[in-house]
Length: 362
Image (cartoon, rainbow, N blue to C red; front, side):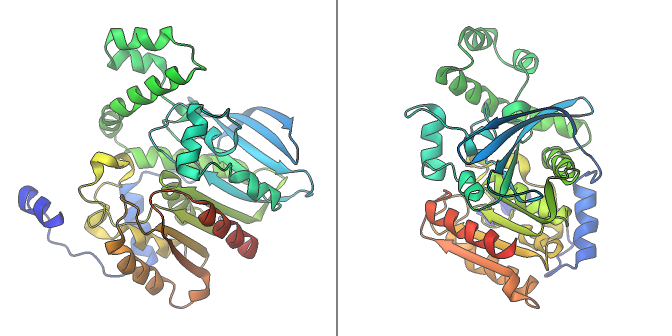
């Protein structure tokens, strides 16, 4: 696929990629490609706590300039603060209406959320298992999802009037509304991506700026042990976990599930079925995506891959694993690279593996 694209597009640069770039080079390139402000911090506006069986579910509404977003903090009842905390980043999956909710919220059998969770997470609200093991879990909404989903004024601007009228005629709590909203959001993704670029930034920078602002908020809380902070995510959540860990040294242990490939190798040609918006512009000119782990070393890192993941084919798994081993060659015990006989899914076995990792590292 790569040779076909190069033949069609042409090769317009001559600088070869550094085979194993050093930390300063990685940091410098990311600062150029991703306009990130590491000091951004969400300001809490509202906090509401609900008592559950074995934990407290704390809903947080916060503001970052003109942006309003939401997160949830799940706190175990039988652990005294400050809590060790795992930041759980939700995935994409074409499910825009909800964000963080897919990870922890109960859903009736047969509902859209229930069926989605069954497909992507084998039916388990896996973040609750982390809570049962003594961790607080923090779940922030990603840009374009959940509380940060498309505003209706933007939807009205870009879709046909009959589509807009159909959407507003539906009950917002219904699965029919969720499905249509997801369809509209998927269709408008390239439009929003183009307009973000015209503003002088890019989608991954917007996404990561908000995630970093949420992490900085979390670091201000006295009930959180900032020395025992981890991150995890599946698919798009894996991208968020990997990049925020590279950019925020306060994250001591990182898990990436089913999002580890090389943009110009095993990702090339898959944008029709993949989250194209978060591919960092021009990154492949300077380094490979796994090279970013150079900013995570020597902290603990677990990479989980599916042998039959159609988005990250197994042909490149060995080469990617070897790259990580080179990065961690001085402290190999800090790196875990696990491959499971699964597709693009965060399976029950993968979930158990990640819990054991956090119990060991945090």
